[in-house]
Amino acid sequence: MAAKVFLKVGSVGLLLGLMACSFIFVPHFIQSSDSAGTQVGGELSADVEWVAGGSPYVVTSDVVIAQGRTLSIDSGVLVRFATGTALQVDGQLIARGSADAPVIFTSNQPEPAWGDWRWVRFTDTSVDASYDFDGNYAGGSIMEFVTLEFGGDSGYRVVLKIESASPFVNRCNINNNSGGIWVNQGQPRICGNVISNNSYRGILADGTVLIKGNVIENNGPPAEGGGVYARGQVTIVDNVVRGNRASQNGGGIFLYYGPMMVSGNVIENNVAEARKGGGIYSMSESATIEQNSIRGNFAGDGGGFVFAGEFSGEFVRNTVTGNVATSGRGGGIVVDTGGKVNYNNIHDNVPMDFVTSVYSSLDAVRNWWGSADGVVIMARIYDRSEDSNLGAVNYRPYLLSPAGSLFGDIDWNGQVDASDMLGIANDFGIAPVQCALGLNTDLNQDGEVDVFDLSGSGFNFDHDFVSPLP
Image 1 (tube, helix red, strand yellow):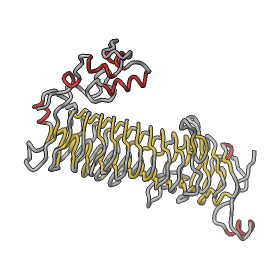
Image 2 (cartoon, helix red, strand yellow):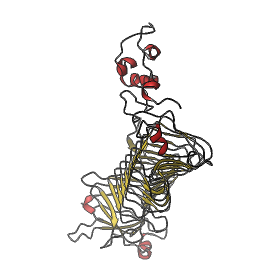
Image 3 (tube, rainbow, N blue to C red):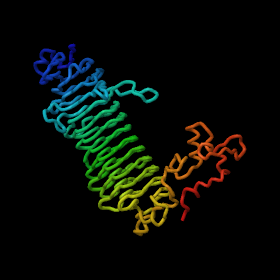
Image 4 (cartoon, rainbow, N blue to C red):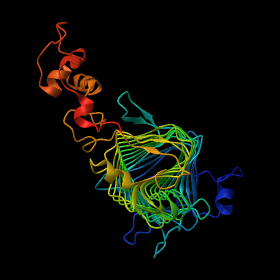
């Protein structure tokens, strides 16, 4: 079935435009056994659909989706970009493949390499994605089950460039490019993708960006943030950030300024080659960093995590283990400027678990240090006891068992307490003490078994689960 490709070729008229333009114009799809495909270039002046029957599409000059126009690309379509060409979205792009038949954007070179073609670029006039009440995609620009490979502008070193735009990038494979994704403002959602083996970084996000459920691995090295470099109001949740490299700081994740959320990620085997923060390097003053597994990362110092900004956020309920400092002392955590570290599992980092370089005392109470022996714990912390110019790391009281290992301790604070009771009650709609402790006694005789009965239950939370103060 033949279909037309509509291209705007200039104001001097269609015929003169065809004579003057440098791209090759083919007015209809071509299907041939030699895979000549369909050559395209220029500005789309009408809505266009690229279908599998016209594949491969060969981009011979930049394709621009004009404002008010839509390019739809069906599953199984192969798009080959000539050297230096790009796709720019001023209107709407709907590229939706499937797990079995992805849309593929790749090089048109016989021996493809990083940076053969430039990028897919969403501008501020592109149609933003929209979502229903439950957060499901409802319309607008989307890239879903799309493979982007062998692209990346040599200057910006990204293959997907999002400028003051908000597309939905879902379940894509972005690999073997000179760089991955760059967000310069906007509110895109980047979810469920594999972003790997890009020679620069995986994602640079500046704006209100959701980065969720991705595998970000084996990218880099840029100077900072091999996996993710974030600034602004960025949410980084439920990702695997693995095997990335930075030449200086933040092998896995580099957090610049802004109120960020980093939660539920596995951050492992990343490397900051010359400096600090193999897993995470944070300059953010107000980030919430919680429930991450930070393990097996390497750096000159601060193998797992480095606080390098005026941190007033939260570092809670994380596991920091098996990280290595190759030249400094801080295998696990290094605190350069301040911060609070509570309810974490911090142990088995090399050579030490926790190092401070600040002059004031630090709040590091209620953590599990891999031991219930205070002498052993103290030997794993570098502070005033080793250098009188430094502040003390206040680690007592400390947890007597791993954070999160107690049945009913749903907030990881080393106790089964009132906050857990309320959380369980909210989840299950039942009396909290009955659920967590197996009690069925209305101790204050108010007709309910609730948190107000805890004080009479005979359950001493601090005594049972937390070490005494010195």
